[in-house]
Length: 283
Image 1 (tube, helix red, strand yellow):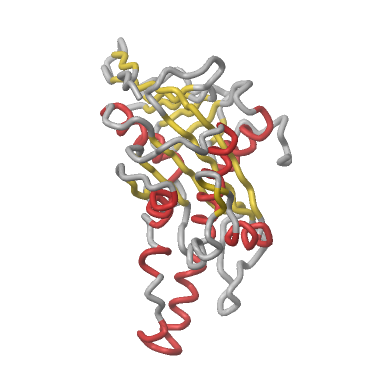
Image 2 (image 1 turned 60 degrees about the vertical axis):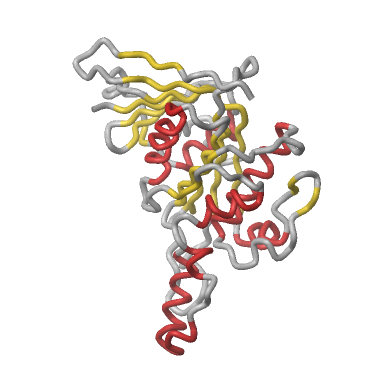
């Protein structure tokens, strides 16, 4: 259990709920159920184990070489999706037509730092051909799509420090189009920030990789499932109970309270995130 649990709040396709706000912003609200939720936190030793075996797919373990060249955030992302699928009992479910939106935070630092060191000492021949497919922004979403044979749209969001917040707006946009039977929203990042130690091949301080996976679907949710709502609201803008959103706050809240309770966070760019789950953006 994370520290500070009691304090850190930090098939048939049905159209999503679209509601026009009665304000001068006159924008729409998108709402959809979250059919599955998973979280993961892994230190360096746990990531080594997850790289060899992140879980199972279709009832069978992954090949030990599947994530051999992957970035640590990709390893955590595949593992949290595998755990979410297992928790929901979806081992036999096809995700062929789903989409994948992945939001890694400051992605690829370890691999790129090592590549630059090799380039300086060895020249172009020291750069691995695995750098582009495994250490660039879209690697997380692409690896998930390969693992579960997903043929829908898959791509990475931002890659910067605000990637997790931006991902909710992108996911809402895709859900509102109503062209997908489901969408995986996967958030990953290090806490504290992963800063490579020059020439050492390791971070300057111990760090933990955090990951969260949300399975968004337009299907009617089972009783008790939370929902994601994105729209123009101002009611939480000055709420003293709101705190700044972070991936750590979200993971802590999910681990401590699951689908219960209420969390509320301010996001960059005028976005509010409420746990049911609800996300709101102000224009």
